[in-house]
Image 1 (cartoon, rainbow, N blue to C red):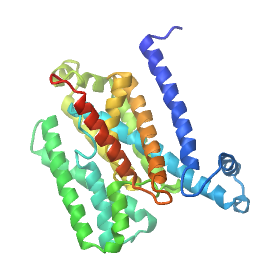
Image 2: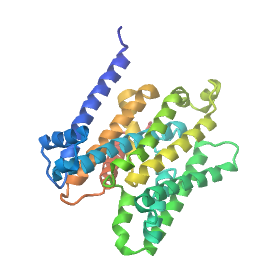
Image 3: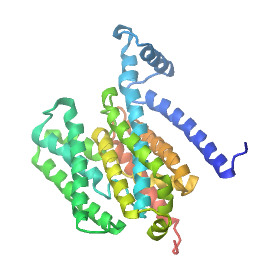
Length: 343
């Protein structure tokens, strides 16, 4: 069977990105404050896969199995998920700048986590912060939906304005809680507002994984409707799609997934804004091909950013959000400088 050129090129691109992702994943496991040899990675993973007793593990094996591998997996899941959130929001609102920040989804989660850090402490143990971030993210969604409730039609412009207002509100709350709180908690507050992957553990990976699974199922199920949205609401209507309902569904799914991501990794900006543009440039605008390319690029970008964040000031660790924001700002500047007046 002969494949169409577009399918062949997308398949080749997918294979190349998967190979690159595998290489960067290995680099991520060996990089860090403690040097780990390639052979020790294989030894540690071999022990883990065989279910070896604790006595057989060396300290380096523990670093590989308990710290580096969960961190690498978290970067892949969150990077892929944020890219998918950005792609869905940009398509349904037809706004190239749409991302979780713009709709207040990230700021709500950050406000929930910072409120707990500065006011109550970890009253529910290790699950306190993820739960607080999740509740904060969902609270921001509820406020946006309440603002939109008085309108019969949920146009992209109204959704963006509602999201922006909620984003400003929850950002102000985060600053307020930070001002009130103990200054010794500043390090924890910085983690939730600038992002980090240091809290990755085997027992909390299921939280972002759940968000990515829900997001992937929704995107695949609604891929044809998303394609129809590319031509505008009128065309979508003529094809039997209800744009406002799809927009609202996508928003709720993205909000749930973002809350799951932020609950473990903090707020990591610019991945959702930048990656869909790169994916569309490489795979075209149709979602059947573009979405999985976006997921791979998002995973690759966050994984590389994490390696840089751990290497640039080693043995200190830079918040990964600083790296992604720097790359994102350069990307936006490059796009702006290469845009023609008629674009």
